[in-house]
Image 1 (cartoon, rainbow, N blue to C red):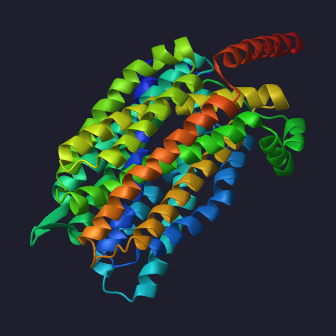
Image 2 (image 1 turned 30 degrees about the vertical axis):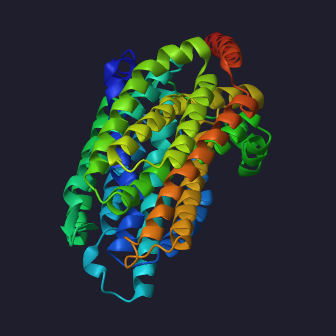
Length: 471
């Protein structure tokens, strides 16, 4: 190995990993926060149709996410490792397809053609190219370092990267994407197309920084015997008997239902319910402040109390805040934004540790199954996240249609009350159920994680010693 390949883990890896999620979220947050708003208000497609398209597209991910994880696990890797090269190969295609999804010039096409165009571009972006970057990127955390503290640092910096992208996408875009027409804030389609192009260019730059700054240190090339035992049927058998993975999958789905409902409904609450699209920027800035505060608090709290325990408590608190907000129904937009910030802090604390929970599950799976399945476990987890995205899109789209929302009724009083109900009750349910899953079902609480780390350290030391004796 070259000296560069074995340099100690440090700030360079943390910053590189942060830029990776920065790149991810330039296209992911654009989709999760604005795609439905763009297609309902600019392209005049019914909300439930957009939701159905997103749900159907996620079914494809049942194959692509897990398939990409298998490709990573079975790879021997090269001088850059087996995960990093995929980031370099696929960063251009994922950015291009993201840009193509937001073409306002096509708004006058027949409705069926617009739906078909959305379906094709969304499949290519999310199920093919985003998967080909995100699965290797997420799996790479366990290859950058074997130390749990280092992995928690990577999880923290990953979340910070997402928060920075959020500041640009969800806070910055509302300032420039809306026009005030007859007293109502209306999304400007051609301007949004340009914004999508800028986000795509920035995504590529961030991916390249991730590729150049991170180093894979934990090498794991599977033997022929391991590959034979670890076929696709065995992988699914492992997954469905793995309590830690199953409960984390459910937790991830619930987290995304809460998170993405907050994000998607912000595009309706602020311009439609409160008539103040620019206040959305303040809300997102406050969210970012909350996430940064959570980032500083998460590691010491996780070390003392445990990642799962801390996540359960923080999400329970966030759920209670959403219920209070539903009943209070503040008429001042800034009071609403302040309550939302508290909810985001609760969610942010869990998000900070969520990626570290994945590496805990990978360790647990290695002890349970006798083989390390970084890509497969992360592929299953990523598929669950996309189920959460799909469930949220379908749910939000259906509920918006149920309360009567169209581009023609967007400012009717009854519709606006329905918008507020969706924006508070759905996240509340997601937060509270997530807390229950983490506290009562997920098995990798603090003592168990410490036990697993010790078992694997002993196992890997024995394997290294056996390898030296055979040489």
